[in-house]
Amino acid sequence: MTDFWLISVPLDKTSLTSVEKLKRTITKTHLGSCWRFSIPDLKVRVRLNMLIQYYSYCLISLIKKTCQCLKEVMEPTGDKVQEHDLTNGVDLMNRVTKFQWDKAKYPTALPLSTLTDIINKVQSFEDLRSRATAYNSLKASLQSLELNLNGNLQTRSLNDVLRKDDLVVSEYLTTLLVVVKKYLQWEKSYESLSEFVVPRSSRKIFEDGDGGIFTVTLFKRAVCKFKAKAQEREEATGDHEMMLCVSTHSPLSPQGIFVRWLKVNFTQVFIAWIHLKALRVFVESVLRYGLPVNYQALLLETDRKRSKKLKEELSSLFVHLDPTVSCDIPGLCQQEYSSYICFHIGTNMLEISKPSTT
Image 1 (cartoon, rainbow, N blue to C red):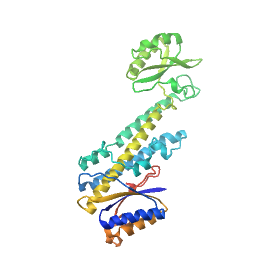
Image 2: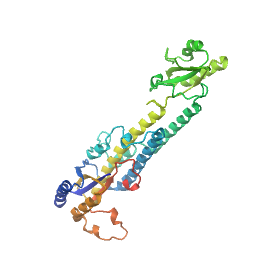
Image 3: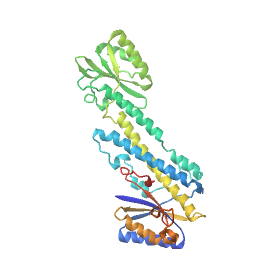
Image 4: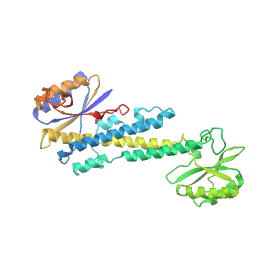
């Protein structure tokens, strides 16, 4: 399993020599890989360190919650969630190893406090929660319409009847399914139920002894009025009943739409999290190494079997930055402190479970 460490060292002569030696050692011993991690010049403000740490924890919590939602939505249908399923084809490894600051989204001329707020607001728990609630509500409504596979036309499942091209679901249009008893009367009258019905859009997709199921396409904004008008006519004539259903196999189904949003959301939050990591390295470098800003950030990749050896190599190469690091300091956990700046980046999103990954 791969680990990424984002480290920062000052650009003094000794440290630069140590960096070159580190690169040679990594190449020679196959301890891992090393890349330069590009962080732009930002406006200095060191008091944001604790806030950035808090926002980083919030984003990783949001990433975990998004992963959890994807697993809950996809795995009950037999679709085992894999790492690539989370990202809609986006290569997270490349996003990390070839990181480039997004100056369009996060202009470097802005104060650090403003950048931090912008990054943190990329998505919110409230948005995720409201979409999950809406999905679960619609899913429950659809399930109530499919209570019995062999039931009457109002309650039977339509998954074995509907095809993808039976349904029109777009930004403005939707498809309703109508249970009809008198076919000829329906075909003559359905367009008169609303001026927003698409002409000649009704088609019979199923029938049995109780009647038939017809599709009708109309503008979404007219659905409520259309159903009300149909209900009035039903009460007067008993000709037909309305029900709404979307095929659960369609990419435009509630599940498909929610899964697609989760994947896009996941990628956006992950990229924002990496930007926040870069911010944290910048602020910590100013705190640790002082002004003027003069440091180098490196991204190290290693597997967990070699991570201990690599940490020992780093400690040896950069011990000059803080010779007291090997001493016992009361009240300080030595495992959490090193002579160089180091932050862990977890890329196996299906395994992320500890706050320390922030």
